Image 1 (cartoon, rainbow, N blue to C red):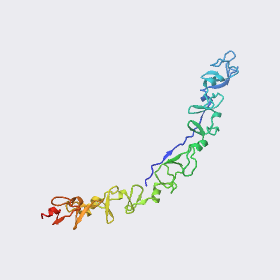
Image 2: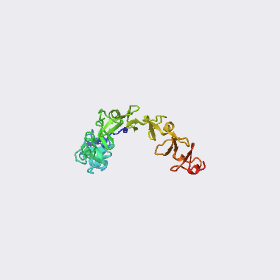
Image 3: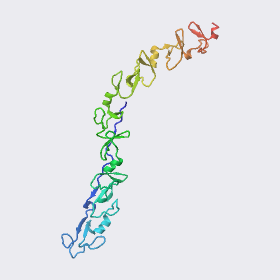
Length: 324
C-alpha cells in the first residue's frame, strides 16, 4: 500500500467578509456638517454672503457641509457626492451610514443577507456569485459536511480535502493513534485514514527476507511477501521483480543463472536447454537437443517427428543412413 500524497488544506472556505463603514471624514473627503449663524465662531458675519458653492442658495440658518473648504447645502452635497446604494439604488445621504464592500455601497438598513433578508451590518458574512449571505445561510446552502463528524464545515474555518471528501482540520486524525494528520503522508484503509507508522504496525505485511514492513512495491512468491528490492536471484543477486525467473529447491533464479548452473546442454550446439516458457527439446538415450538443433548430422534435414539412425555420436536421416 502506498502512502497518499500530503492532503490539500483549504485555509479558508468562503472567507468571512466585513463591510467597511465609511465614517463622516472618510466618506465626505474631510467634509463637515454645520449650521450657519450670526456668530463669528461658527459662520460668517451678517455683512458677508454665505452661499452654497453649487446652487448659490444662501446657507444662513441652514445645515451645510464643507468639502475642500467650500460649503454645500445638504441637497447639493448629496446629489454631487453621495454613493448610490447597491440594493435600493438611492443615494446614501450625508445623514446615513455608508457600508462599503469591494467598491460597492449600501445603506445600513439595505445591507442584508440575500437569502433570509436579515441585516448583516456589523456582522461577518460571505459572498456567492456577488450575493451577500450571512454565515448561517452560506453554511446551509454551500458548505461541505465533515466526513467524520457529519457536521457543517462553517465558512471561515479550515478544512482538509482528499478525493472528494472533506474534514474539519481537528477531525482529520489517524484512526489508530488519533493524532492529527494535517499535511503529513497517510494511507486510507476502509473508511479510515492512518498515519504511516500506525498503518505499518496494524496492516503491513513483513518481508520474509528482511522482516521489515512492506508499504509499497511488494511481490508474492510461494505465498510469501517480499520487498521488490529483497526478491533477488539466488545466483547473481539481481532483482527478479518484473522479469521471468524459475526456481530450484525452493530458491529463485534468473533464467541465465538457472541455465548456467542446472540446465542440460544441447548435444549439437552445447548451449543450455532451459525448457522454460513452453520451449520444446528432444531427448534420446540421455542426450538432449534443442528443437531446432535436432537434425541430420550429414545433410542437416530436421529429424523432428521423423525416423532417424544413430551412428556413434551422430544422428542421421534414413537416406543418409543407407550409405553407412
